[in-house]
Length: 510
Ligand code: 3NM
Image (cartoon, rainbow, N blue to C red; front, side, top):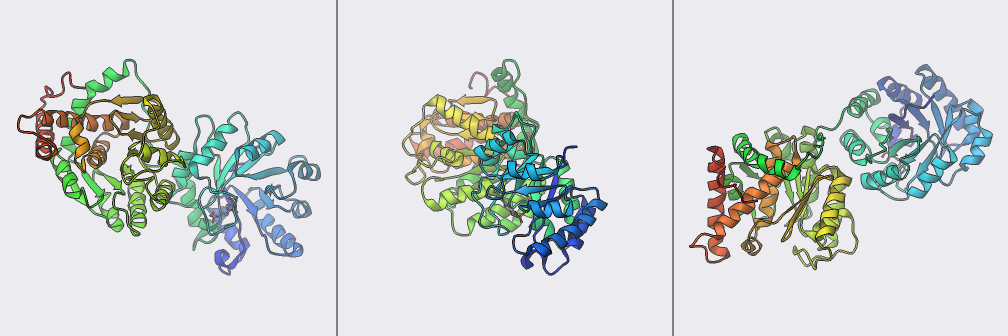
């Protein structure tokens, strides 16, 4: 019978985690909460004590009809008749263990690369532990932190195998749903998560396990049903734009901007002119209140400071838990090592419905190591149009979100559909804040139109680009300076027309 890996408890007897409590009592409590498999992992005690503790644990797990696996020690598993073992890459190899253990014993293998995973699958292991998901104080000597992106690559490599899969490392209540959602490859998903400290060190291991069971059963609140491409997709999408703009004006979303100080005033005015309600707040703790409204969060790291990332992470967590959209504009992502680290931390720390950036920024978000931006400029372009479209699609597919790669032509993708948008005006590139405003506008549209995020963002971009074209065509606009007020006016004009059901501004424009 295949083992239920959904909530996999790994024990730890170190004082920092067990906090002087009895291991069997903690494990029993976790079993009451719904743990489906237990691994006894003890890297320090002598064999005699290992056997004694394992035997006691086995009495407990048997009561709950849950398999007990022994970490590393095949001899201990044999001595007490445990249901199986879990082996690391440096432990006894699979073939040797298979020879020693009973025919039906469960054997799991730790893996952190495609090669290791494929070998375990070919050997016939029952499941693999895939790690390290996130850096964790519980085990600091792990091989590599691979995140959801690395886990997805491994799952995809073993998509044709029926081998079980669990992720391990730094998984807790606030990230478990995202781990399961974002790791999923098109043909293979994780079967479960392996947890140490979030259960063993919890004040109430039963309640902690119960909470995990509930979270694992349900998709994250930000998960969206993907919209399958329709026949004559582009035409259908275009027809829907005016009514989505109308809807956004009606919803009057609250857009919470954690944005750079250079553009703050301009972007707030843009948000007002399109009919949204902006709040500019860099203070992460405010998000728990602000996320309760119909609205969105924008993270724009244009003027990053040492305090920004922890504040962003608090706000992202609040919006993710609520299920309200989060937009990420990784300004200058590849300009400095500090910003590169910030990108890694933020992408590991939360879910973004939309990642928006220029070529250099999007390549950095993808994980390219060869990007060097000069300040917040994109840097020399190395990609042609097709490559940009592919990059946007691949990043969106990997993150299971929407990506907007901006430039002379914008590429927008939800991982399936890719749309190139060529509207706009060169003045937009001559005024600071216009690019950042796209993040805020996108947030407003994502908040108002949840069922198709690609269409929501597209509607916002078209409103923006057409307003820019209208503004630049005004007789009194002679350059970037006079363009700014005209642009805000034209956004307002489109918003007013949309609210009155007048779509003439859109006809033949996109
Ligand atoms: N193995 P926590 S990470 C036991 O990456 C273990 O293989 C890991 O602990 C690996 O749930 C890890 O407290 C510890 O983060 C996981």
